[in-house]
Image 1 (cartoon, helix red, strand yellow):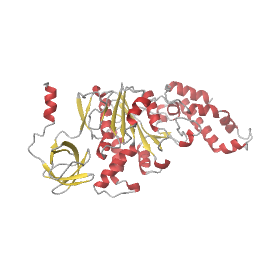
Image 2 (cartoon, rainbow, N blue to C red; image 1 turned 90 degrees about the vertical axis):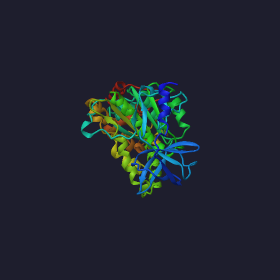
Image 3 (tube, rainbow, N blue to C red; image 1 turned 180 degrees about the vertical axis):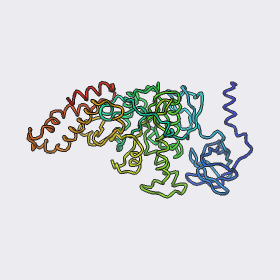
Length: 432
């Protein structure tokens, strides 16, 4: 038997004589006593069928509540509880590139055991405000409408807002394939299990060479879905600390918030708008602020997808996310009727840092595009019924003459990737 194998077996043993006991089992949480844990401590619950993991989420004078990473079925009063002194960590290292893992760092891709060189805590503080680097370099994603009109910088955080079935996953795949980043970390949180192999094969073309997937599907427990997002961010932070520029994509923030809603309501938190407890709004910046550019290190450029239920942009999660992020990309269902894919509504979208990373000629061309495209939308009905007479408005005449060119600029095939320089040159040429 190898030393590494023996070490792993010893790490999984409960050698401490101190243990607690489960005294109550309810759907969503367990009540135990006999230990003095802290909030956030990881425990191992042991019974005759095996063991499972849980986290201490509430403390009382003589007892504490545990939210399990799996489900409560099979757990009974009297089961033993052991403290895990290592805390919640995830394996990191070059070995995890090309792998699909769950939030606990366990491989789920059938490619065998994962031998990582190190591990990192899943919960870490965000970058200190005065240690953040200035975002002054372009981060190209290979999508014309984003690179040209919503230019992103290295270390920027953006949201992709859309209703169900509008094309978030397709756009995510285009960004992962076309992004100029050596390392790509993708977190699929709370989505259907069917979508995981589909995303790998269809959207990534089956190529995971420089990519890590952290997956917690909708049938996983709320705690797995919640900490899947934090685990993925820790993986991205490891590569950032090595000086790499990392692309981080998470789908979706809404499912992450729903997981915390389940946990919070089970623990007795009061519901607020749409049933979300206050802890959800606290949790979002704790995750999102961990992305960014750090002095002396690399950067994490993050794209967070937000499912807008019923296309309602005033949804509390969408509203809170927009206030934290450095820009938002809105996908519009109506654009798909005109055959515009990806259906990015450039008039409702914005990149707050475009002015810091793009040159003057590029910015002026993007502003002119928005102005002309806005005039087309405002006068669309008049133009279609023939009520507008050419010559009444020179700027509108120009917009009409460039309508086809602007719509073609917004269109792009799923398997197509266009360099940043080509996108900018096409935009400038179009707006001359």
